[in-house]
Length: 213
Image 1 (cartoon, one colour):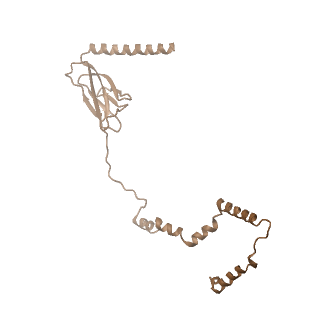
Image 2 (spheres, one colour):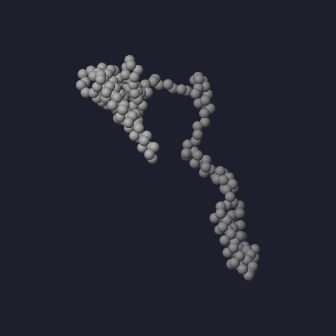
Image 3 (spheres, rainbow, N blue to C red):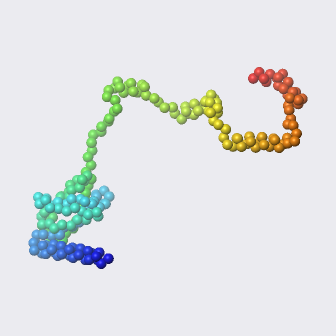
């Protein structure tokens, strides 16, 4: 903890020394001033971090911080150039009539939009290839056609043969067989072969021609 405090105090001392040195430099040369400001996007007014601010013909400059803020020492009359990839370059001339030692601005950057001609890319080299591909192309069926195919009688029969009996039907059959066993417990189950009413219905159906169907 003590070591961290020492580092913080040491950093504050260095910053104070730099500020005092800049102040002494500004006082020594009347043409110098502290130029600062914020760089924002013109459309949304959001900070533009890491934008380059260069003093023209001197190769001196700084970068904006994450909040778009910058500060540097310039001469009156210097031309500053703001540069950021994807945005139009901006120039700003420091007025030579300033009487204050500090000056700040808000610089707006406009996106550099490049409009290109429309380019259409085709997967075929010639019209003949396109014609052949168009003729042989597969057109998928719409929802109505697919529904008709799924409801065809033969298709439903094939699906019915493939679908196994589910658990609910098996349980119902098991319960019915179990109930029949208890219903005729201790006696023989009825046999329709000796039932006169069953024979009467059989002959009646035979005379009506129902077995021909």
